[in-house]
Amino acid sequence: MKNLRKALALSLIALSTWGCGRGSQAHASPPPDSEPLRQLLVQQKQQTGVRAILAGVWVGDQEVLRLALGESMTSVPAQVDMRVRIGGVSETMLATLFLRLVERGTVHLDDKVSRWLPNLLAADQVTLNMLIKNTAGYKDYVPNPDFIQLVTSQPFRTITRTEIYHYASLESGGTLAYPPGTNQAYSHTDFTVLADCLEHATGKSMADLYQQEIFSTVPLAQTGYSTTPDLPSPLHAFSSDRGVYEDATFWNPSWTGDSGPVYSTLADLRSWSKAFGQGQLLSPASLAELLRNPNSGPPSDTYFASGFIVNGGWYLQNPGFNGYSGAFAYLPAQDITLVLYSTAGENPNSDGQAFGILKKLAALVAPQNPITF
Image (tube, rainbow, N blue to C red; front, side, top):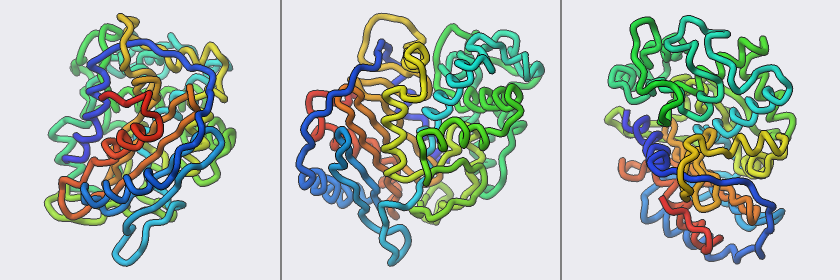
């Protein structure tokens, strides 16, 4: 499935370069004029051929721009309060949730997977912290050709964790991508194994943990956890992955495991960006761990932290999920949030456009902090 492959691309680029970064006190710049931003988005919609764009720009506490362009469905205009599947932005929430449980002593960074899932491959070598940092060595199941064939041929089918572990080669006789803790590679598998361990450790479902630790704490009233096709008040998404242009809004999201189970709105993602990026739900020590470069190599401008990319001072995610293309960026030094989701038009080249458009927005809003990958 082409969209599955695209979901990986930019994160894998980020993993090719390493560096270090820490949060800093936000000092908001004067808000920019919204009209050039609006003109840019209108221009980009025309040039990329996307069906719809939802976009929001915030500087400090001021909303500079929140708009919807195009159609959700035929003759149904896109609206700014429509929900989208946020894909990998969920990983920023999972990382924060995990570290909140660590702070309470419910789990520990160095707990081994074998404490809860002893039958998984290398379970006695992989720690929970390796999972959130993507250094566990577990193969990513998403690029597996057999998995792509399964999801493409049966897009409404529920994919279970047991099946995910099978396609990730985590059963007896399976193989690792590399010895645990010796490398880093983006892996949807790692997030799914981490969530499985957290459910065992707490006796609660991930839906309950997200509600308890994230949604009701920030709070995020228009945000939810879903591993079923149900999606309330959505911006409809479309895909050509199956050889025909079709509505993909209600394709089953369970294939993403626990790397993309959340849906949300522009406004709620702004609330989340500040809580996440400023570590409002974490202690200073936990925030430092959230942001830590697991490679600890020479200083550089780009690295993958805990479910997100650090680049040029920005904290970034770039999901692609069941017809949605997304881009999420927070610049803590200036308290700037950019959120953009697009849906594909009939030309397949219009898929995966959100991050490129967001980079152009960032160049206007924060020219001194360009996004460089």
